[in-house]
Image (tube, rainbow, N blue to C red; front, side):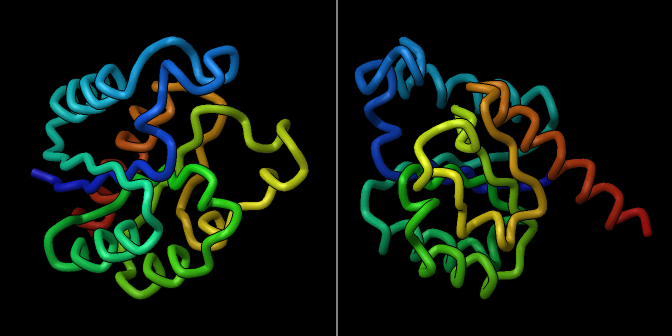
Length: 149
């Protein structure tokens, strides 16, 4: 089994409540269920965590170093502000898929830059929940290709 840590950042727990015209009406529980089902269908073991605190995201990334094969991360607004999260991802040196429910490139100017994308292997944006499935598929392919070499 490939093991993937899925980290959801600040305000993702507010899905369904926060700006439903942008993020949809489905709640965070629905997202977790969707990710778990996607992982199961891909034969991936995944752990899903959500934090509103930047330091807790950094700690989760650091702890992932020896326990997981890859990380899927949607850091929310920390995407655009956190050098600390970028540095943690670089330090653990695991493959990373960055996900955003909305297309950050078409939103406010300050949302167009992502620190995480400076390290991430792939950036998936604007695909809603399905972006997580694509991230898992991408990481599984990358893992399988590295194992077979």
